[in-house]
Image 1: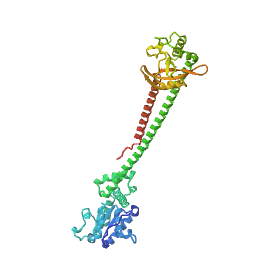
Image 2 (image 1 turned 90 degrees about the vertical axis):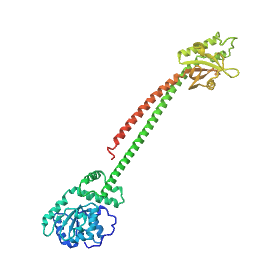
Image 3 (image 1 turned 90 degrees about the horizontal axis):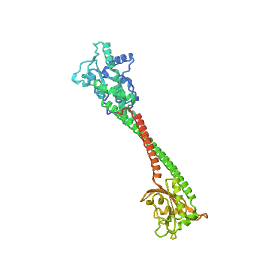
Amino acid sequence: MGQPSPSTPDPIPPTHWVSKNDVFISYSRRDKAFVEQLVAQFQALGRDPWIDWDDINKGEDWWKSIQRGIEAADSFVFIISPDSVLSSVCRDEIDHAAKHNKRFLPLLWREGFDMANVHRCISQHNWIFARATDNFQQAFQDLITALDTDLDYVRAHTRLLLRSIEWQHRNQDPSYLLRGTDLADAQTWLSQGISKQPRPTANHSAYITASLNARTTALKARQKAKWIVVLTTVIANLLFVAAGLTLIYWRISTIAEQQVEQTMEETLDGALAGIDGDEFAQLSQLNLAPGQTEPSTNPLYQEHQAWLQTVHQIAPKAFPATYTRNADRKLIMVGDLNRITDPAQASPYHSFITDNLSEMEQGLTDVVINLTPYKNEFGTWVSIYGPIKTQSGQVVGALCLTYDSTYWTNLTDKIKGMMTIAYILAFLWLTLSSWLILRAIQPPSQE
C-alpha cells in the first residue's frame, strides 16, 4: 500500500472502539481499481469490508487502525498480484493476521510473480481465481461461500479474540472476563477449535482459562462465605441453646433445691414444735450413773427419744438427733434416734461432737441447711440444724435432722440426666439441620 513499515504497536484499545467488519481486504495500491470493484460487490450485498480508504480516520495512526481492522474481521482476504506479493506492508498485514489465527482467503488477481516470494500463509491455502480471464461473478460467489462457511464458529473466534485483547489491554482486569452463558459458550467453542479452522490462539486459551479460574475462585469464595455464615449461625444457635438449657437446668435445680429445703425446714419446724425447751435444758444436764451410757430410765429422756422416733415415723428419710453445749462450751450429744433404730451408728449420751462443727455451731443460733454431701464412717449425708429454745426464748440446744445424701443426689442426678438428654437432642437436631443447610447451599459443580 506504499506506507512505511509499521513500528511496534501500542496497546490495543477496547473492543467498543473498533468497528466490526466481516472481512479485511489486503491489497497493493496498484490493484485499487480491482479492489474497488470487489468492495462494490460486497456493499451491494449489504456487507461492509474493512478497506483502508474508508476505515482509517483522519489523524489516526494508520498501522494501529490496520491492526484493529484485522483483529475485528472474521476473515482476511488477500488480493494476490506481483505488487502485493513483494509489498512489505502486505506482508506485515499477513503476519498480524497469522498471529491471531485469522481465516485466510487468497484471491488471485494478477499473475507474473515468483512463487518463492509468496507468503507461506497465502501459499498454503486454496486460492480463488479472479483474473481478468476468469468469471468474476463466479469468483465472487465462491468468495462469499467461503466467507459464510462455518460462520458462527468464525464469528465467535473474532469476538473472543477481541475480548481477550481488551482484557490484556486492561491489565487482565477480572471485570473483563467471561461469565455465565458467555463462559459456557466459550468452553464449547474452544473444544470445537481442536478440529476446526481457524484454530484458537494462545490469547483465546489464556482468556478462557483465566475466566474459568476466576469462576472457580468466585464459587469457592461464595461457598466459603456461605459456610462461614452457616457455621457462625450454627455456633451461635448452639451457644444460645446451650445457654438456654443451662439456664433451665439452673432454674430447675434451684426450684428442686428450694423444694427440698422447704420440706426439710417444715420437718424441722414440726420436730422442734414437739420439744419442750425447758425440759430439754433439764435433760441435757442429767448426770449418768457409773456404767451407764444413757439415762434410759429417766422419763424426760424416754419422752425425748420417743419424740425423735415419732419424727422419723412421720418423715422416714429424716434421722433426728439433739445436742447442746456443756460447761466447757463443747458440743455434746443429747438425744439420738439411732439408739433405738441402729445402736451401732448411735452416738452415746454426752459424747463429744467432732463432725460438722461449723454447721452445728451455727445451728444453735439459726436454721442452717447443708446440702453439700459429707461422709462419715456410716455413709454420706446432708443435714439441717435448728435451735431449741425455752419458753423465754433462751437457746438451750439444737435439733439436727440428717438425711441419706441419696435423697438429694438422686434428685439432682435425675435432673442432670434429663438435661443431658435435652443437650444431646438439641445438639443432634442442630447438627442435622446444619448439615441439611450446607447440603442445600453446596453448588452442583465447582469445576
